[in-house]
Image 1 (cartoon, rainbow, N blue to C red):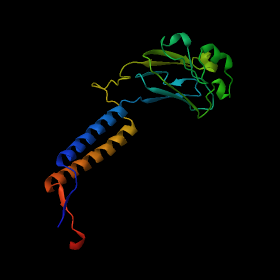
Image 2 (cartoon, rainbow, N blue to C red):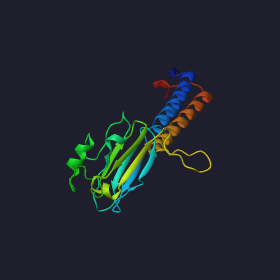
Image 3 (cartoon, rainbow, N blue to C red):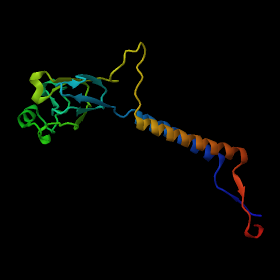
Image 4 (cartoon, rainbow, N blue to C red):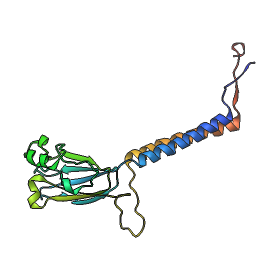
Length: 203
């Protein structure tokens, strides 16, 4: 009878289990810290809903036209943080360019039609004021406040952070893998690490 070692020590199994757990925690943390997406509706009542929103640095705001009337999302150039990137639907770099180019029904001019969206990610802290070009005179104005931690909810206690669905799914997968590795480690430690394989003549 020939004995063949499987070449894996108990210490290595435990190290692998610990490594899987650490990697899972790190991956879950990285995902949970990724930016959150917030939605602002642009309605036929000629308003941004909500017209004021507080988010954290790295978060993204998605504006969606939910009615039949097209709108624009155009930042006031002098009313955003000094180091922040200018933003406007249509991809304009300056307010004057966005204003002069806007044409109802033309998405390249900055018009966001029914069912369409425009998005911008905010990296710099501060207050951003913006407006809808065709409905500015009707008072269609909005504000984005970017502050560390983002919005808080007044519930009498600490606000509960929202965990993205991707983070939840990743946590389930990582937890399952970690439990499986621990189970294998337990079996390995209990029954030993050397296994006997029969020679061809003894089978």
